[in-house]
Amino acid sequence: MSTDQSSPETNRLPVVTIVIPCYNSEQFVDKSIQSAVDQDYPFINICVVDDGSSDKSWRKIHDKFFKSMTHDKRIYRHPDIEDNIEIKAGVTENQKQLLALRLKKNTGPSTARNIVIDYCWEMSDAYSLLDADDEYYPNKVSMCVRKWLEDPQRIGVVCTDYDTENTATGVVVSEYKEPYSQERLREECIVFSGSLISKLALEETKEDNNYFDPNLHGPASEDYRGSCEDYDMWMRISEKFLLIHVPEILSRYRVTGNNSSLLAHSQESTQTDAIHRMYIKMDKRRKINAS
Image (tube, rainbow, N blue to C red; front, top):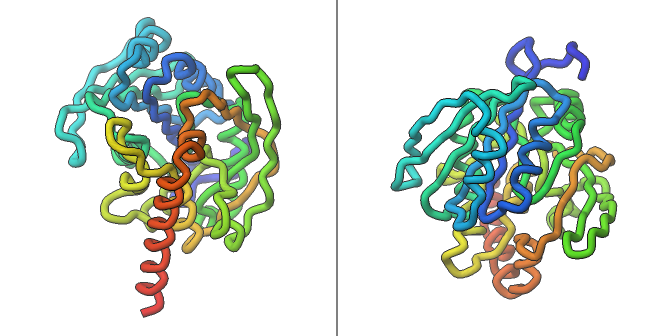
C-alpha cells in the first residue's frame, strides 16, 4: 500500500474496521478472526460480535485470542439493546486492535452489525464486512482501500471476487462476479456481501437510525424474515455513490449448511417477500427524491 494515498479528511491512511458478526460459529470463527489479523494493511480494527451464541463461540474467541493477550474489559450500552454489552479489547502482536462484543440475546446479523458500526464510529473511516465462517486473503483490505481512495467522495462500496468452499466435500470453486452496473443490481444482488463500505456512504444512507435494516434479517428465535439486508444496503448506497468491482479473488466464502443464502433458497416465498419489501422502500425513496 503506497503511503501517498490518504483518507478523505486527513493526510493519514484510513482506518478500516472489519466487522464480524458471529452466531453459533465456533467451528470457524477463530479462522475468520485470524484472517483479519493477518491482513497486510496496517490500519485495522477487528470487531467481532458474538450475537447471543448458544455454542462455544465466545469461549473459542477468548481462548484463541484474549487468553494470552493483555486486554481490557468494558461495558457498552446501545440504545437498541436492553442488556449491557460485554466487551474485551486488546492489541494483537502485529498491532491491530481486536475488540470482542458479547450480546446476551441473539439479535440477527443486521442489528449485530449496526451495533459494531456505532461502537467503532469515531475510530473508523470505512468498514469491511466479514462473516464468522468466511475468511479474507491477506491483501483483501489493502486492495479495497487502494481502489476506494481513487475517488473516496464518490465511491461508497468496493466489492471483490471470492472462492466458495463446500465444507462437506472440501471442493473450492472460484466465483467471478460480473462488472458492476446499477441496472443489473436492480435485477439481482451482484455485489458480494463481504465488501468494504465507506463511512460517508453509511452516514448518507442511514435510515431510521439503522445502517442495515433489521426487518430484513432478524434474530434466529423469530420466524424467518428473509436474507436481503446486504442487498438493501447496496441498493441504497447505489442511489448516491459508486459501487466498484475489483476483479480479483480476495476472500473465501464457506457453504456450511447454515448460511443465510441457503436458508433463503429453502424458504423461497419468505425471501421473495423480503425482496419485495426492499423494492417498496426503494420506490418510496424515489418518490421522496422526485418531490
